[in-house]
Image (cartoon, rainbow, N blue to C red; front, side, top):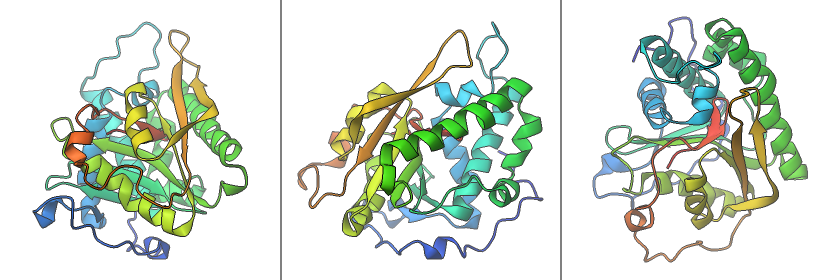
Length: 286
């Protein structure tokens, strides 16, 4: 994958320092390189590559790129390049304003979080991350889907779902695991790094999922579906895309037995994009 455009400024992380420091996990794998870690500036490209691989078959990821009616939704060099650029912009934006964590020795799994009181919708972040370029890199219809439909829908839904807690909660925008790296406990470890802190702070966590098969995975992590738990992307007249809304309330103890092995618990969890912030996809992938 190409490096981030030279015009994109990656700052030296003053904003990440505002995020409370989390203890390094030591129970994920015997090899220290397999532990969860917060990305640095040199990790962003590799983290974006992981995200792109994880969301290759995600309907939300394709929704912004394959906009021609009746055209096959199959990847070619041009559409694959655009998919990777979107992932680069997303990782860059969350690196600057949020929290990006990775797990595994080869950037096997990545999570994009927005901490309480933060978002990536401001123009400065859009500019510095390169996301503004999507206004001419996407088709006219793709721009409408991404900037006019998708992003506003996500913001409005999150505000309605969380109410007074909207600005005082953790938002799992994306969670992705490379094909071939699933069932190793990486996705679980990435989630628990933040949910344990959220529990200590008494804060809720929020996500959107574009894959039904991921719902059980999230439920085992303490997330619950809401009564009004679905939203739809509807500009593609051939197929509406459904997203499930889930919220996790702060908990006093682990949802699962501490003796359970994370690899066993994730055997039926796939590694496709689970989206999220659809900003790419508030989708997430296990």
